[in-house]
Image (cartoon, rainbow, N blue to C red):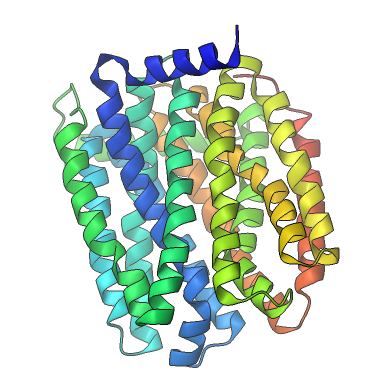
Length: 405
């Protein structure tokens, strides 16, 4: 079977039966949410100037965003198991839009941090609902469907940071972040209008459902002791620690250490996610076809090499090549989350993913503030070598995993 034929079959399977419109709406919302979140690293210099913040404190600001986006995923997963996913995703988009309005009008660092926390909580409602609704729409193509939505997230992360940098330079940093808010409101409306509702007609808020959700969470914690889920949870935590640490300060590293201009740094930062547009669908399809272990190792080895080489490379074109190597790790989510989604029953899938994502992402949220401390002390290069070592540990753990659940 040729590559063109295989691609055509995947596209037909994803679009057929009226599912494609829902997939586009869900993926668009995900792209705006992720793209908006990646504007923060680009505007860090402006926040430092306006609020008098150090790299450590701006790292803490990013950590707050990631931490609250993480801790909300457990209740978000419980809600996704019991209630209408399209409503959760629409509410998520609108709450984030409101939070962005608070961020750009904040009058003090305290308000800035509080608005960022609300932003994170709003974001947390979307990820699990996105996965559970796709797992019902695409019972045989979950890896591919997740790969598409994750790739669209990378399109947002590719396009929005350079636009934000241009608006921040031409107008103000508030314009660079604030323009995302109305787009999110529109996306929320489209998601609710085009996505299917739950078949069971469950309503929110009953005591029996809350009790059952807590029982599901306890059951999931017990399942973490199984080797497959336990190892994958550790792998996901280490990956998220690496990813959050890297993305929080890569534009700052490029301007302060590699002497790139701010526009060059923002475009290269966007290029990091642009490669993910290609990598994530391929990683999801690889998971569906050859299994978890080989597909995951295949995308992590180039990333480890990229981190190791980054400190010794200079110049815009060599940095483009190194950024492409590092960006292969973006395919990790399509593989690990497909594996975890299939490890749980449909009844506890949202809760299971919520527990694991909350646990891993909340712990990994320490990455940006740790990397901010590293940057404040002038050890950015050594920090990237450390990330390469952690990536090698992830690869070693992957060798102990089965190909599938």
